[in-house]
Amino acid sequence: MISSISRSGWCGWLAAVVVVLFIPHGLAQSSVTIGDQSFEVTSSVAATASITTNPKTASNGYWTASSYALVPAVGAPTVTLDSSSTSGLSGYSGSKIASVSFGTLGLAGTGTISQTLGTNFTQGNTYTLTLSVAASSLTSLASDTFINLQADGTTVSSYNSANLVTLLQTANQFYQISLTYTATSADAGKAIGLSFGTGAVVSLAGTTYFDNVQLMAVPETGVPFHLAWCAGWMVLRRRRWMLGRAE
Image 1 (cartoon, one colour):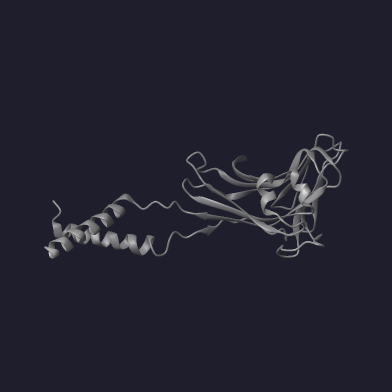
Image 2 (tube, rainbow, N blue to C red; image 1 turned 60 degrees about the vertical axis):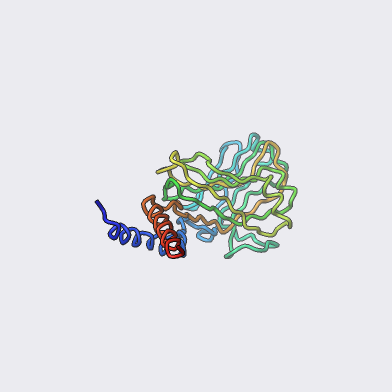
């Protein structure tokens, strides 16, 4: 049987751990590695669907660009990685960007930029995906511009044009977009994937630009039960001691 004194000493030490480790400092976030996160690594790599190759894909060794159109001869999107075509744009980092461009009205076309990371989801961790997005014209956002966080290729969280229209107020100006997701038991051990681009049944002419992709992970915030119990026990013990002194 643990004596009152030994229990007090044991719980006092654990309560101190709760205070020192959890309360003042919070839980440290860490950056998840993304290859070529600001599209600076190679010269321009592009994919445009054609009658003979649909979808059409291209890779710079990190990102995969994919272009698809129901009728490739009518408005197939051009998906470009590491592009230096930044004239008229503001708010991007580095000297290059990525883009999905519809030169004319597109029919059931989709341009996608994707990467599967070398990191798996951890249950309970909260992941925040941020990237900068711009549009050549705000009307082009009527097309389905999307940002997806994926687990083994399946989308678990997404951001779409309905949200972007409320945030992007000026054409050709980059705005930072954030997407936050807490991994479940179903996601544990599955590869983290990123996917974003533009496409719709009818895609309006215009270009959507992407840059500066980052992913942060924050561990589960729970405090171990025995630490929380001891912290509470110490508070109750002190309260009883104070009431005894008052009497």
